[in-house]
Length: 180
Image (tube, rainbow, N blue to C red):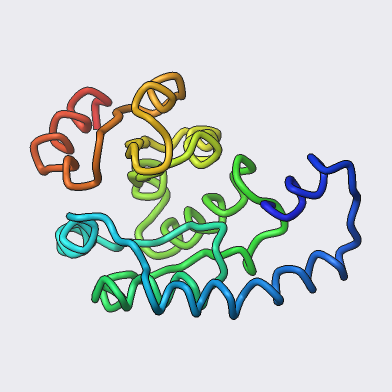
């Protein structure tokens, strides 16, 4: 999606073959940079571990699978993530809800339709929030990539400054507010 948007903004169209070539050319550069200096957010690993103790954790991302796997390994939480939906699994990027639809089908198969309908999404972009909310999923927005003000103008159910601000008390309050 990013390559398509960049090319579209530059007034260029691209073929699926050219798009695939650009993505593959980017892959080693991103991985080399990530291995040298991947930035993680304080509290991210702890939140994944905490949520995994309460139920299955999944990742829905527009990133490539090896990039996601590397990030989870870097945080030392890969063992806590049961399902990954990556760019390779979808035909449309966020704000299209396809990635979340795939993840929710997995949750429904594993835990039932009610669990899928009440799965909590944590997002850091307006497009991701729109994708989650398009399926009616509760969503907490984290202001790591966009400001709290920008995220407050979305349909997120809650907005926090950092991922470390997602506490059990916040989750309890959110579930109560949503009547879940």
